[in-house]
Length: 122
Image 1 (cartoon, one colour):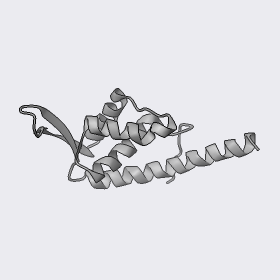
Image 2: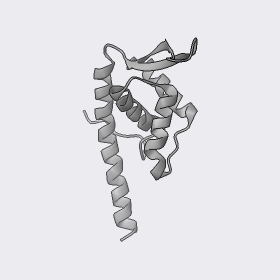
Image 3: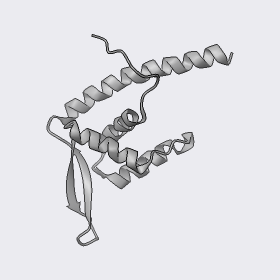
């Protein structure tokens, strides 16, 4: 059964979760590093995801059972804990399903934007 979207475009949290999943897939990362990578990634587009939204998206992924936090002592800094994010045992499969679902929604949003550009700026 095809899922109907209730919104016009993808919400910021869903967008951030998509990128966080991809970043966590590629590296063993902690929250501030994820924030810095996201800010750098979108700098040229004028999008600056804020700290609270990034952490809300991370907490959503934790609550959904996709990732978990692992605390470690930071190298070179005695007693400074850093929280890393990793996939749960089922998390990678769940993440792939989420990414597939979001891809369908992003493609729908792209068609809406392309139509708006064609219809209004010819």
